[in-house]
Length: 305
Image (cartoon, rainbow, N blue to C red; front, side, top):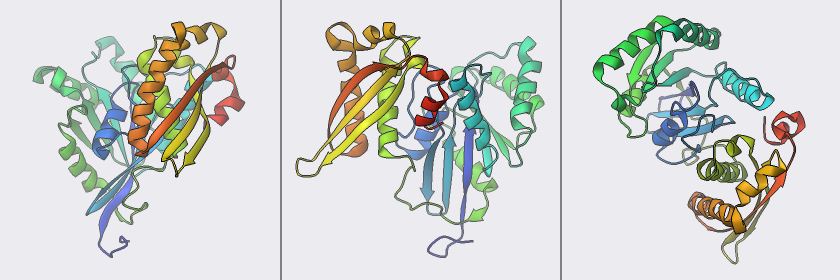
């Protein structure tokens, strides 16, 4: 199979999986050289599967940024893990990413190995171990980490890197091109993602909630874009976004005294949305409560799960 110009290329789908907060979204944004997935220091920021498309003269790589793999108890978290695991069945390669700056205690080795084996038991494609944040530990600890994970699973290759700084991305790309099949371009070369503008806008707003509120609020927050109206004559897009919370007591925290917190979220989100859409944006945010929405299967469907 060949691309539209009858030149053989390497193409395929690659799932980026791993524990929460390993740097998966940072890696995808770095590989794409633009922001598609939202990022925050808090774990479990990514909830849905995000698709990003890397194009080069000799390749097209479709990247799937997935929610973090973890032991989930709540319906929302269970859906997040399901989304990540489903991605493993439809790809040509898997990047299993870990944060090597976190310790791997001896007593957890057996548990970690069993957990990883469970995730990968149905994978029939090459799995590359990506050791992220190697700039934060010495060579001796890095080698020990490589040996530990080599006992867990027969990885096709091991790539030490720093997703934040871009170190190791060339080696990772070269390894992917070795394992991906010859095939077609699945998407036009000028499309970086298949996500809708509404979805990306909602994600940007949710990212700002993660960054600008305390530990509890982000995990109780969903965002719905309820109106998206373009006015070509004015060169303006007017967006109404709803920040949905689970309890009335959370509203005051998100709104803040005199509305200052909500205004800060809106200002930060609007700047990123304008960069995304390359157009002036009027962003109007409001806060509403939908009690225990994270356990509401119907509402989870509205969010795309």
